[in-house]
Image 1 (cartoon, rainbow, N blue to C red):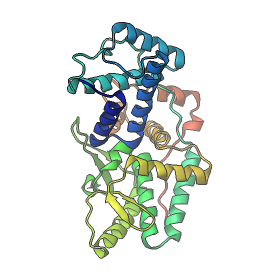
Image 2: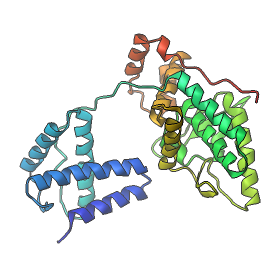
Image 3: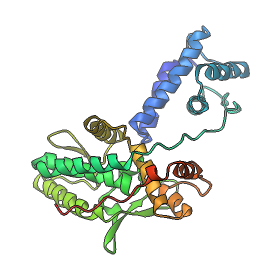
Image 4: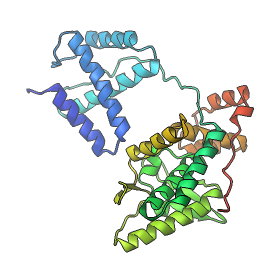
Length: 315
């Protein structure tokens, strides 16, 4: 059976997109597979792998160890190639996965690098200022951005959690709200949102629903993808969220990312003495997940890791 490695890699990446993998995830897989292609070219194999023997597997392992100093970088590239060979097996190109027995170092967790609380306050004030000073459709976009900020810092949601979140996932809980996370591989769970979310959410909901009614539009998702003039689709792609944070970093001269803001939320929960089991539940991780790195950072610099809920504005 004749086949082309590059074509099969493109097919594999398209499959990942269809499965709902984020833009950044697919981009990383593409880069990891390109590393494998470079290895083959270096070995003068010209991207032909009708067989991939145990000796070649060992050579690739040595190649990665020499090229990358980080065990996590090696681990990621091995995992990407392993999944690609699984895909080739479904295509009846390989009968077994040659990467299956390739040993890799255990994953090394990086120390958390949360966004400082002062930067979080400045970011929130900037978002509120933009919302207050805008009108028309751009005001709805700024109001949406405030909700993104609350969902990550207020409830510790990942970008993948908020991508397809629906209005029905925001639940009234006495005087406040909770957000329901419906994960495909585990039972749904809900996370409390801080009281500062209330007014911002009610304002955003009213603005969006009025806009949808006026334009005879219908979306069920809480957030939306848009250009400067109109809503393009319901739900917010991971790339859309990244563009939001790129804008914040540029404006505030900050290193803030969705990941660093989420880590700030974890420190906030620790400051509030939320039980570790509850934090793990809210993060959507297994009970065996360790918060030790966060606790160590908190011990080393308790004054620098003080995070609180944002205050309700009377504006």
